[in-house]
Every structure is written in structure tokens, then in C-alpha cells.
Length: 146
Image (cartoon, rainbow, N blue to C red; front, side):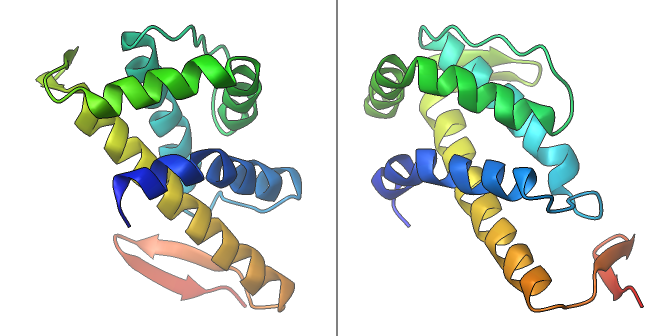
């Protein structure tokens, strides 16, 4: 999928993830429990670098709802920031690892939310079909819970 498609689907992907969480989808057995809050934090840093006003006060998966609320309040401004960042091929930002292209940081976050929404949809479908829960049993392996 191309960057414009990720950008166009971002709000929808965020809504899919939040809806699944509000419906009670259990992400504790997945990496999403940790990666979603981290990716939202990084996305806020990227957007703030571009002039956004995101302030996170929650931890864990509660960040998804907090971010969406702030995003909806600033939707027009945030979409403008995203578009400017995607158009700017030279903007850089400091990270603990050094300096990186702001555009690339944003693209990676948009890709992440696209993949996370896809994964959440698969999990919801499996759950609605009565599939047994899958739990992580080690690095890269899943076991079906009986």
C-alpha cells in the first residue's frame, strides 16, 4: 500500500482499533498491548514536531482513546501537519538514536496503524467465530489455549 493510502486510512484504522478495544477485544496476549501505546507516543512526538499540541497523560491501551479524542479535536490542523510532513523531504527530528527524517517517522507510524487495524480485524473475526484464544508461549510462537 502506498503512503497516500495509509494517510487516507489513518482515521479509519484508529477507529477500528479503538472500537475493538471498547468491544472488549483482549490484546494482552499480543504484542499490540505494548506496541500500540508506544507507537501512539512516537506519533504524538512526530506530530508535535510539526506543530501539533498532543499531550498524553495515560498509560497502556488507554492511550488509544486519549489520542483519538485529541485527534478529533484537532483533526483539521493535524491532517495539515501530516500533509506538510509527508511533503517535506528534508525535515529532520532528534530521537534518542540520533536524527531521522520526520517524514519517515510518520510513514512508519501510518504503516503500523494500518497493520494493527488489520490484525485487530482478524482477531475480532476469530473471536466471533469461536476460535480458541491464542497466547504467546515464547519468542515468535503461538499456542492455542484449550
